[in-house]
Image (cartoon, rainbow, N blue to C red; front, side, top):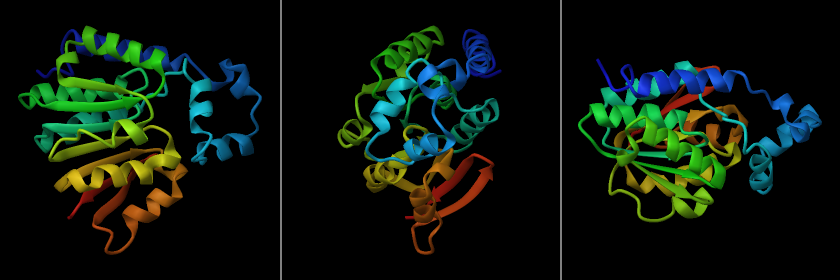
Amino acid sequence: MTTLTTAPLAGLVDRLFREADQVSWTDNPALKNLTDADRSRLMHSKTEYIDFYGVMKDLPLPVSRETGALLYMLARSTGARSIVEFGTSFGISTLHLAAALRDNGGGRLITSEFEASKVAKARDHLTAGGVIDLVEIREGDALETLARDLPESIDLVLLDGAKALYPEILALLEPRLRVGALIIADNADYSPEYMERVRSANSGYLSVPFSDDVELSMWLG
């Protein structure tokens, strides 16, 4: 029995995934009218991400069920005690990571989200799941909130915010990564610059595509 698979968190996570499955980008008029080219441009933009993700403030934007399970397993198997997440949204991935911390005996999860309404929802979900005591939600632009007061050593990182910012967020966290730390980047294909960074020879990383939308990297030091 684990925190992830028992009440109250198990039922909560299942409900949030089911609710997310019922929401589509096409439900949002501003997004529905975007061309594929416009959507791709905004996803790759380093300057328009606040407005773009602000439009999506009512969308859960969760990881997949499989990626959620992967996050829990990686955090558990590595005995992670210090985790940083970029992109809280409604807190579905945060719940998986916090559950792993609980089952590892405790720890600290720092997560960043600039949309205030999402911060409120995530906090409610983490409270309902019984893991809020393990999580520090930093509201604001992650380029600022994750640039200070970081743990001395970081065991695991989840990148799931504005894709174009993955290289910049990684650069903020890299000095604190312990050797062997894992970095999971969701939808990393939207950030060619990030992919080039972690896959380059002598980059300090060993990196492989874990699935169609996840890049799994290890910091070698």
